[in-house]
Structure formats: C-alpha cells, structure tokens
Image (tube, rainbow, N blue to C red; front, side, top):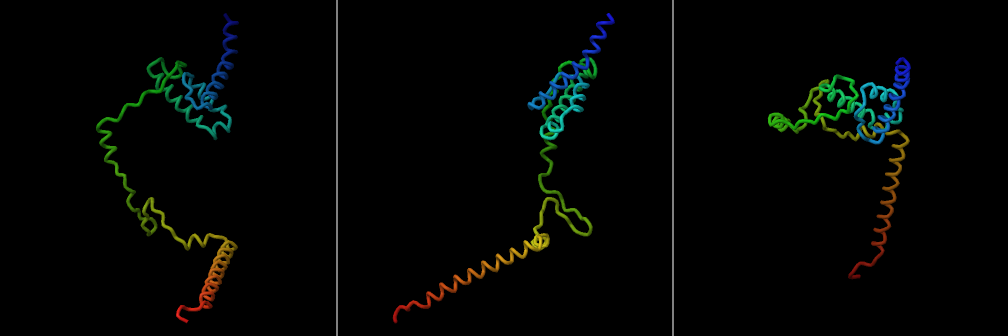
Length: 173
C-alpha cells in the first residue's frame, strides 16, 4: 500500500505538467482549455512562455477557463474539482435591462471645465501653428525652400507663356 502511495505522489507532478502542457497547447491553438483543475490553470499561467503571453490571447483564454471552472464547480463538489466545466450560458437581457440600455445617450459627453478652459471630450482641435512649431528647423527650411522653388518655376513658366502670347500677331493687323 505504501508503494502505491509513493507511485501516486511521484506521478502527480508529471500529470500536472502534462495538464499544463495541454492547456498551453490548447490556448495557443486559440481554443478554450476546459476540464482542468484551478491548480493546473495557475501552473499554466506561471509557466507560459513570454512570446505566448504577449502575442496571443492565451492568458485571457486561461482566465476565462478558470472562471468557467469555478462557476461550474460551485454545484458539483466544490472548488478545484477537476471535472469538466463548461462556461455558464449568459442570460439574455431582461426587458427592463434592454429599456435601460436603449435610454443610454449616444451623444458625446458634455463639456468639462479644466484649468480655466472648457474642454469638449471627443473633439480634436487642429492648430496649425502648433504643428509647425513641433517640426525640426531643418525640415522647416527644406519645406520653405521647396515652396519658393515651386513658386519660382511656376512664375517662370507663366512668364514664358505670356511672352510667347505677346509675340504673336493680333487678329486684324
């Protein structure tokens, strides 16, 4: 009997490790890992590679599975029971809740006085002077040079066109 208990104790970390691996594989594939213990979910969160945590929704999926497992285990033997727990269905909104949601204004928030000025949330004021003040000086010089060059070339072309028109004989001569 003692040998059997020793084998079970030695096999428990290996089973937990395989559950952790399965959880990480399932959430990496984009599926909700259900049916694991809260301890296995916690271990998976601790052992999750940084790339998986940063570039996937794996932490969110595991937290959803934890919540579903905790909600499902309330009536099935207490927290931490390793039974498969499906997410509890969300009840549709009651008529009262629906009416309240429909009454929520869809307009912008009212103006708010801040530091002696009235700010209108959601309104972006365009201030060209501030846009030019934030440009680096060499870039401003280049923009002015390009503008002057464009005006000079345009003026030169206009001058040529008017001179050519002046050289033509006028009708009736």
